[in-house]
Image (tube, rainbow, N blue to C red; front, side):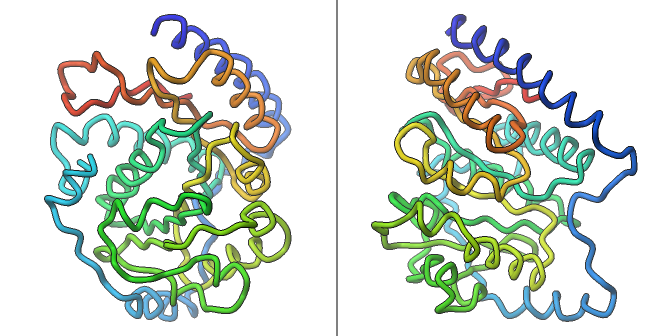
Length: 285
């Protein structure tokens, strides 16, 4: 555990040096966390959200899937800290697109994504859209308990409207999910079609934050294909599972593709007194 945390700290220091150069080259003008929506379009955005089918997840199902942030409380505290620090960093840089990935499978990135999404949703003045882009092994619909046969891949290919593949939970949180794994995810996750889809989602729904649940970095080129579309990324590493080499290689790959926002140490066997649900939180930068 100590070696993994030391490696994360060293990788973060190297990343900070890269980010410092990027920030120095940027302007000092403060930017909002999301693209602004013209007042004339605000009613259209409200109508787009209202038109999304609403879904109410079962509390017991979410608990079984280790989603603990829907209502807040002590168990959600580590994710709430992650939410607040993520929002602060993204607002400071004018970012709105956040990718969540991991070095390898089994690190719990989809569970972290879902907890972060519900934590964000408790900020009532923030609209959040979550896209399941782990197209080889989509998990968000299952974690949510959603039975609708949505296929975000149809929206990527342009054969369906984005809203037709989305579900709204509450007033300010929407999920674009998929049920069927695809054989050509890397091809779908790069190029003009995925970029146009994101632009349409931003134009229609004006989300303050878009969260992408991406595939693991080290198992295929799927995440690498998509990452240039993200403003920043979180890496989820699993304690006693992710090796030092995996963490280091993943950190370097992410830094080449986008801005590395931080590292979350998941599945920690020794959480602090404030948290008893099997997740540990590593400080983000």
